[in-house]
Length: 307
Image (cartoon, rainbow, N blue to C red; front, side, top):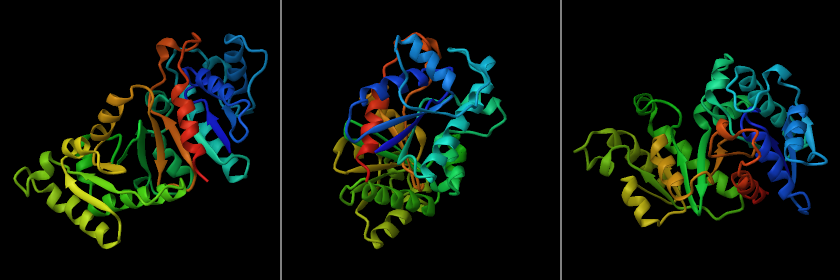
């Protein structure tokens, strides 16, 4: 499998961890990493790591040299982050890559470049012609998989956007992704919006209006789904293959609690296989040669399971 790995923010740890991960699979018979980013950034990091040669890469030529400064937040690096993903998507469309991994980005750097950006799912949706509201993030670590109906937005904005249709679309994306990864049809546990899933309206009518109708419709469509149930109870039972959270923190907190800096984040509901690591740019250690590539390695292994 040919996996295009974008550098993420070139001033963060992305270039270093991509190189280390590519070297990890250098002799693998079936996994072929291909770095995507500015060639001079890749070569500089290879030199910092004491390597005689760089792993295979595509020179995206997106960053002017003056914008390259490891450990520095720079809008020029943010613009390059987006350009690397654009190049990777083009490689998939041209049949030169089978899947994409996006390394850590800085939302601040991208937005300071004048590009509205709230994470990779929306960007990948834009680049593949999909509505942003049909691209979802699935975090996975240590056997736990949690998909998010909403992501990087205020709780009030997310609540206003939640609808039965959105929850249904997220659940259907879960089923389609399982099929794509060669897995059996999953059982899905749906988190409630309010504590205890609202207690039949005692704690607000949001679940009465949104999650309950969505679950009822999903059952009619033959999808194995339970809920809505309070997220704390659902996770304590661990009876389901995948969980569907309504808000960012509902899903991120448990994943990062059990697996700090090691989770993978797959964008589902889009026509390309795309995943990213669930940790940040770590500007404080960028360029020092001490970044841990485990998150990238495990994300490569996740995508390698896809046909």
